[in-house]
Image (cartoon, rainbow, N blue to C red; front, side):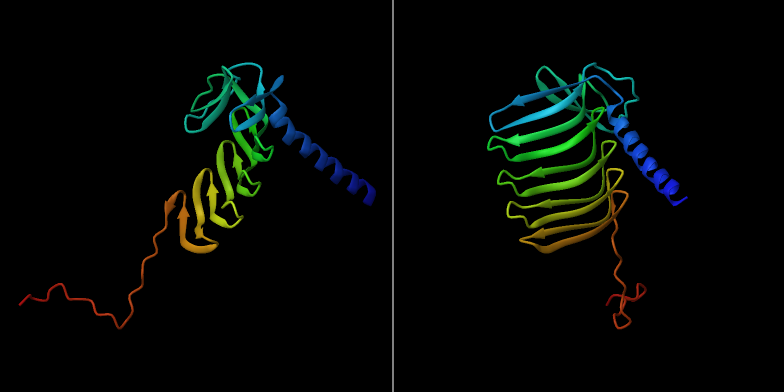
Length: 198
């Protein structure tokens, strides 16, 4: 009996992994290309056909490939959508940026690095929107920004640091800053609005 339960758990996990990968690999065939520029080069996957049969969201930025360049536009795909792995390298072969696309939208964990190899930024995308915790670092590895997102909008704590020291702390809900009202102490006097001026 225990063996059957273990087998079902393993099978369920395997099927979930396959379905998550199928979401990205559903659209095939995919091409892979490397482009070289003055200060960096990139390797990426993209769909072989233009205009995949999907509903485009007018509020999201889509990344696509055309005429030997990667483009991005809000609410439209004007070429072959990036789809799959995306990696950018500095000319010194250090990583610059790494993540995945799903039909032109950033998806999953993305990372960026400084040219010296130190982590610059790490965060998660979900259907083209920033999600959960995001962190930015300076070239020495000290934290610069710590923020939380929900559906692409700041949501929760937002903190800025200089030389690793906290200098700004704010709270957001659905992209709007929450302003805390100061409580007035009992000893503070409030001028009477009816008081006559002399």
